[in-house]
Length: 145
Image (cartoon, helix red, strand yellow):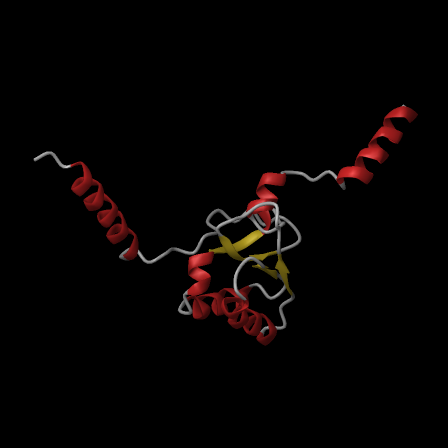
């Protein structure tokens, strides 16, 4: 038994603390999905129109914490930091150089809330147009004459 604890101690010293659900933590900026109020993609963070909607969400969740993706340019994160300061909400800029995620911002608690839908809906009009362009390009390249 003592041998196992020495091995565990050495492993912890080399590799750090063992984490539950490491893939989920990498995707969600260090937190678990069950703790998330809302997750916003990088492209949504670049869209300034999302601020008003997030402002309303924060008003209902004043004890949550904002996690911002440190891979993004500070000019995109700055309005969200100002929003967090306005509501006196704690925030952290999370940077993980070993993995990348499409998540730009997370509003989460330090305990599980198990919210079913955590993603903000993107505008429906933009996605079909992008799909159509890809299909038409594909059709143009491989069209039989």
